[in-house]
Amino acid sequence: MEQLQAVLNEALEAFDFGAPVVGAIRFGQGHINDTFVVHTQPEDLCCRRFILQRMSPAAFKRPDQLMENIIGVTDYLGREIEKSGGDRTREALQVVRPRSGEPYFTDSQGGAWRLYPFVERTVCYQSAETPELFAASGRAFGRFQKLLRDYPADTLYETIPNFHNTEDRLAKFKAAVSADKLGRAAECRSEIQFVLDREADCSVALSAMREGRLPLRVTHNDTKLNNVLMDEKTGEGVCIIDLDTVMPGLVIYDFGDSIRFGANHCAEDETDLTKVNLDVELFAIYTDAFLSQAGDALTDEEIAYLPWGAKLMTLECGIRFLTDYLVGDEYFHIAREKHNLDRCRTQFKLVADMEERWAELEAIVAKYRKG
Image (tube, rainbow, N blue to C red; front, side, top):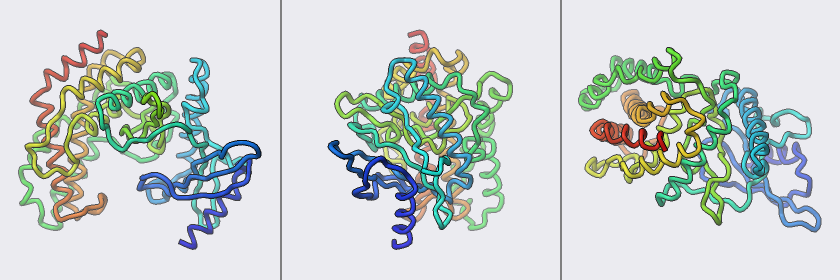
């Protein structure tokens, strides 16, 4: 704790806040970076706040590349928002450079720190408590895609290599099954077979990309509701946050991760699989909201592949949980025995439900594609 306070003090000295700092306390519910809200007191003005973060060295080995991505995207977003008559100081994150002028500050222990102004009068929700909130997140992520439609995605660094490479995830899964170093494969034969039966599915989107049918886009790669700041009065999405995973990717992955996360009413580790089902109504609500903003920016093929995004992101997540269980729970934190196995079964049940209702999903996408 004393060491953290020491480097926190270094970071506070490294930035010009424009007014005296009166406090800095831990903030938010994130588990990756160390996040603090910094309070300053300008003369004759209300308190002004900032978000100060120490980027996780375990998650992000190259903070220089990470921050180059973020600065490029946020600057571009700001310009596009201004062109459309919006408020770039509220609708896009702004990176505040340290006094040195560098993209981030490096403390005496090698920690990398960045600073953003606090977006006031907004709320961050941890789950989609109402369909209206889920729809608002869909419009926000759809607008994110629309604003970035012409950004050269191939100039972005891949900060987490193979993050949504389903073929690579499949290969790692097969290696874990083959090694079976803890002898766990026997108890999850049905789950292993579930993946093997869908081996071809793991190449569907990547093959379409290689063939030029699905273009590379700027993708967020963590499109959960808690990464959208909502206006505290209107409930509409104001600003997309947590841009650490912004990389080149496929738009169907961003859409699909939102569906995986929000179009159901079960916990990610629900053990009663009768409670695990895709909510087709929520799928329709999100699809309508997302395409109302992003539709004109996407190709017809991208829109047609949106159900595949939902299926593949859910299948990939289940594969990751099952792989981690087979190798000894090395990546995901667990709270009980077989926790990752329970998680994988939940994801696979959602995949199976999507497959059963595939025609409905395609019909919903076709409906909102036509408007």
